[in-house]
Image (cartoon, rainbow, N blue to C red; front, side, top):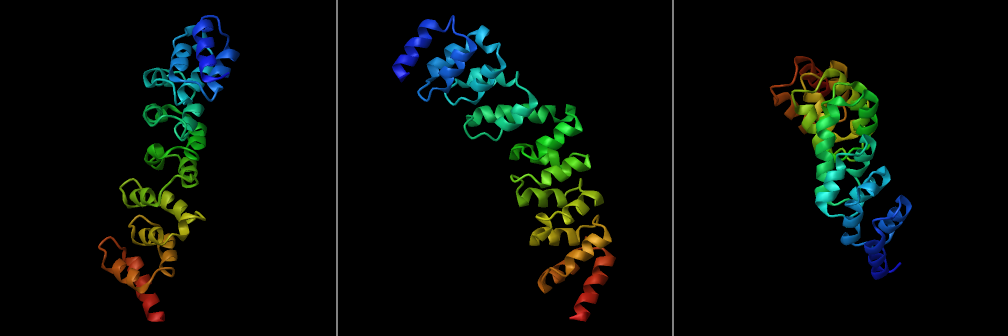
Length: 229
């Protein structure tokens, strides 16, 4: 249907439309806000989960309607909606707010699956998750920025186990700033900290020696490296 045909059809028949017809109308590239609103206001149609989900995703759905249906969606769909660029930014923020508020009630399996694909708004929460496999999953998330991982490493919540996981990650262990942060961190296990030193410049080593956080063990390792060279 054309834009005008679609509007006329929905205005006339929205009271008796079925789920398939509602979904077809929403899938029409010419579907305007007025059609989305008529469907959103029909309780019989929005009783169908796929209709609610599509209305939240649809750019033309009036924001109050879309945000209302956010509260009636499954966790897995919310995680995907938070990274869906087709969803209006204000609606995505509402989705992310619900996700952040409910993370603590999710099972480890749900958190692991979500950490791999979540939006940037949830990354800090997953970095702080105590479950080791959740932390490994967030390290694999392509949306994890280097500065967020450095924030975690330098923070009070980093643990020897998580620092070891970062050092063993194929992607992050090769980043210069990550290596330097692992070398200087007082909670880095000795083997982890020492393994970073050979990949750092003389200037880095000098700065690490000057850093008051640097352990005696790492200082001696640096001194040995300097003597060897």
